[in-house]
Image (cartoon, rainbow, N blue to C red; front, side, top):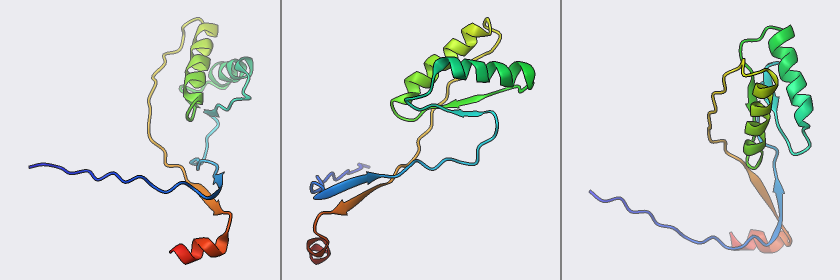
Length: 113
């Protein structure tokens, strides 16, 4: 039994690409989303507050794309700040993203279909 995979190169986009914001599930107070402007010290303070004052058992730090590495380093910094009292359990999953291509010439785009 053999599997065949056909790969075709798609035409270059003639227009501008609009990247949609990733869809997030409903958040809970223990979800922390990391972006490129997030300050490490602010995350450490938030983790301390959630775990020590509000007694949450677990916190989830989310990072998408290039922010995965940053999310991991922030989790390690929080672990060090709490003197290794927390255990890190890194997991990954796939999320689907949607980009919109807005054609430069709408009439030409309609005629090609």
